[in-house]
Amino acid sequence: MSAKIKRVFVRSKIEYFAPIAYSDCRKTRPYLADRLPFATGSVLVFLLPYYVGETENFSRYAASLDYHHVIKAVSDSIICDLKKEYPNESFAAFGDHSPIDERHAALVTGLGVLGDNGLLINEKYGSYVFIGEIFTSLAPREVGAISPLPIARCEGCGACAAACLTGRLSGGGECLSEITQRKGELSPSDIELMRKINTVWGCDECQIACPHNKNPIVTPIELFWGNRITVLTESLINGMSDGEFALRAFSWRGKETVLRNIRAVNKKKDPV
Image 1 (tube, rainbow, N blue to C red):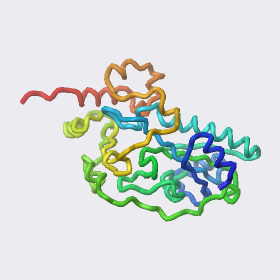
Image 2 (image 1 turned 90 degrees about the vertical axis):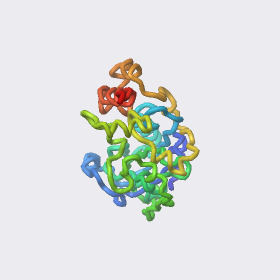
Image 3 (image 1 turned 60 degrees about the vertical axis):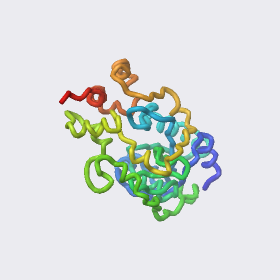
Image 4 (image 1 turned 180 degrees about the horizontal axis):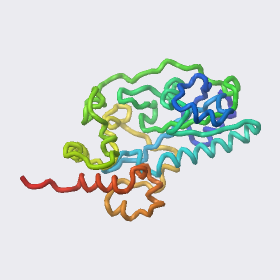
């Protein structure tokens, strides 16, 4: 890999990154790359660990500011440094909504293994990572692009499937995280599942059960540390301005969805 690129990522406290030719990536939204004719050279894939500590009643990924904002801020910084090293080249960043299958790109470049729960598991940060990528005009040979590796899988211990409340990982049911994000009314059985693990947004049960997440390491990315919350309450949500709420990962479903979940989980059961 190019020493210049290594310096750029290390400077941004990114420990896990790898270059791959765009032609070796699995395209999922190629029209996004079509808007950037230069972006068919190389792709720099990287991991952003996000764990900042435990949460009380919602998924850990939402404890900090919306990860989309963090990915953008980190990517913008990386691109700024890349332009200094390669002034005649072009760059564009993506994260979550990308021209390629991000998980596939991270797996075939050796940044982790595929867990039975469908998540990428990194050797140091477990599955508590987001994936980002920088599309570049640089030729694959110039960045030292990695030839795709066979996708490695986890040990298959079965812990994640055993921990899944809905049976999703055993071939049936809907992910509880998806249930918490659903619009409209929740069924009594949905609410009972949410109460069982006390979650009002998301579900981390399969991640908590994974032995690779037994002793999670706090992220070195400082942008994840600020504005951290540990519990979602009605007063917290109602006290947020629209601007503050928009900076949270759960904002895309609107305040009413989050408040609905909080009320449903906290409501006392009717006496028999």
